[in-house]
Image (tube, rainbow, N blue to C red; front, side, top):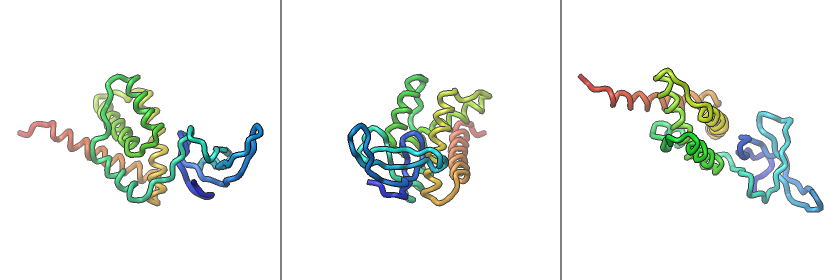
Length: 177
């Protein structure tokens, strides 16, 4: 059970702070509720039953896991799925599972794909672009909190690791004379 003041990743809304835990009665039923708000929107209040298993609430990852995750961007992400509809479905299921390592793998794969298509003067498809932006927003904020840094520094480090990896892969493809 989380405590008042804890930061959590709340479903697809992102990082939220628990302001209170209290009993509330709806339709004659009294339950304990987390009262929380997104860290970037104090005007939005969310009430989520403590025993709700339909909405994913996860504690912020620890420093070591965050450092390991940043390192993972130097390696290969998850498998690219050629069929767009299938890719969207599978990647969405991974995001909804809350598995941060696999979510980081999606970011890794989509960023690599984005750079590859941009080198061919094309653009990443809209569903992939939207998914990438959404999960980068949540994941980078969580990493920034865990590592006591900024979103921008996390984004820059991830990009540097991806570009370094892509550079290495490209140099392996170029025949030496």
